[in-house]
Amino acid sequence: MANRTFPNSSLLRSVPVHEGDKFTWTRRNGVAEVSDFNGTLRIDDQVWNDSTDRGFWIRSHGTGVERLFTYHCERKDADGDVLGWLYVSYDDPSVTVTILND
Image (cartoon, rainbow, N blue to C red; front, side, top):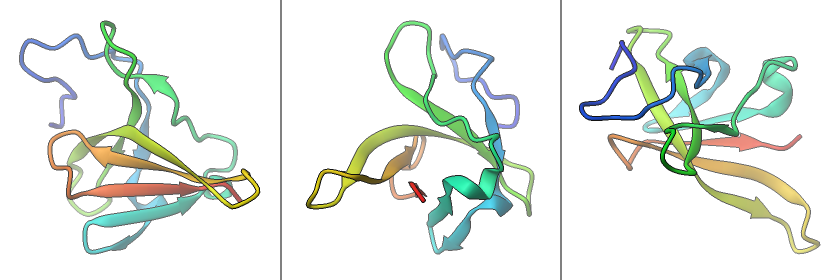
């Protein structure tokens, strides 16, 4: 995945890449806060030019491998305030990341 392409894909080249060390990883789940990115966080970019999927890449700080994550859902509290957003790995749905709205 290092070249950020998929066979027969209309993947957009402008999809942002975030470093994996911005996330705290527990097994196959990463968590980060919006403030961890110091204003550089982009999580709502269109991924393919022929669909409405949104997401970003994460580059492993250990291996350099890049993995595409796409938006899954928004999490809210009882008052309707946004707590964060869940993203799922495109090629392995058991790998997820949560961005907390701090």
